[in-house]
Image (cartoon, rainbow, N blue to C red; front, side, top):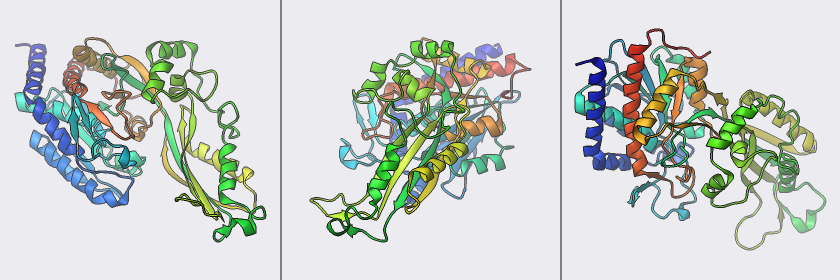
Length: 477
């Protein structure tokens, strides 16, 4: 029997195992989603620890080796591997087991951490982002190991618990463990495709920069009748700053903000417009709202190839029932920048601080805190790893994927590119209306199973790449 035939047989056996184990796979995913592993809320630190322990135990159960929980200054990283495929490539699989806060809880049809299957959809916080997509690869590995006892390539797993707060400890961990993370490629699934019958590979991600601006005008709140019109109002000062951040056309009004924005060729824009979501499709997934933002670009281009600044939260004053006649002493706002290639988070932070200093009166105190800081990523789309992923999608979706750019931010993507210097492929299986970060998040079970099959085929395709290309690309240039 030829090596190619053995590879096909192994993949076919894994797919057959998947068909027989589908109901149990859903139960396992529900158990995973049940952990309220919210990294942004300290009250859930114990839940994150319990989730990491559960995930590590599950990886041992399916046959992975050297499973360990690596401690960081924050939440733990779960690692595992299987390294018994001599002369084959090693694939590094990344995912994150932490989730976004579930609030507002009253908007959920069922409890966010009591997973519910309704029809062909599993509902729960993290079902799509990223537990379901992470689990696609875990279950592909299980399907191989339980059906044939081996994998067609070597694999290393790196599953973190801080992605939703910007992966603050991941860079230090990757730099310190770069030698044990050596691989020929990395795969991560934390992105959407266009539709159930429209697979897509993401080749560009925006960077992220989250900041909090706090204004302090007084030592304490004052009576608005006695002092209104005579002293600074923290909410009014904050409102003036926020209003100054965009011009009337929707462009960001911070000086020099656009200086380093990488221009996108007309050919690439045409490709993205032809293959990406239309304005109608994108706005429908947002709930049928009207388009807004920078003129001269489609809604998709605004989210994928142009930077953005969103005000994500405001606090200050009195917000209870009835009225309270006070001048608030303090007010704060949370802001989130999305950056495009060649924009550096550190430089944008400096520009923002300079802008705030110009707008605010010298008599007003302010403080700026920085949270998430992640560089944008533009991946090679001509690499053999991308071709392996495309072939895998074609096997399970019956058509080749299109290439898209995403407005989201995945901090590890820049680390893989800059520190490990290995080609990375972003293989998404979520759908645009899966309600990531919103109430009633879900993962379509047909996409879960199709994703597992795609991952099975991807590992098989990477095995072909190992044997066919002794001089294969190993380093990004």
